[in-house]
Length: 131
View 1 (cartoon, rainbow, N blue to C red):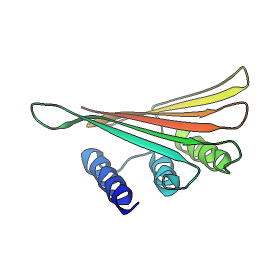
View 2: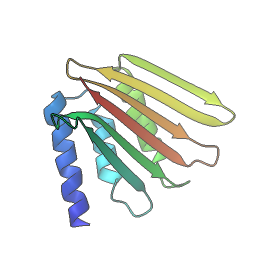
View 3: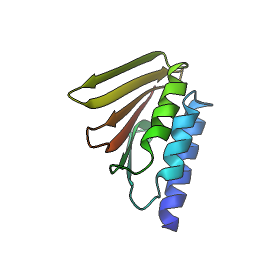
View 4: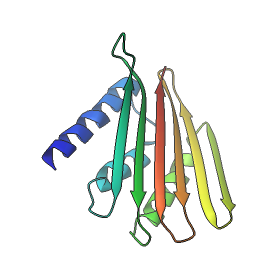
């Protein structure tokens, strides 16, 4: 558990250093806070350039079961950050809610996706491409 927290802290720090202050802070903070909860599944993948060892992309996924109590918090974080996003889209199709936010800076492009299924299971996917 301690190893996971250290890894998560280092990854968060690397994201912050690579990009400066991010507009999507609410979503990132909420993901970091709940990522170690028992009922939540969190994965993070870092892709590096094999020659330079520079970070190319980071993919973070957070999944929560139905009635985890996170849906409303995450939906509110997405709603608030949509004002700062370069592009924001939301759709409800076949009872599944999806929202996408795109952020861009001089050093990275980030796409955030929130999915809430009919049964209220939630998934957040963050893809960060470092320029």
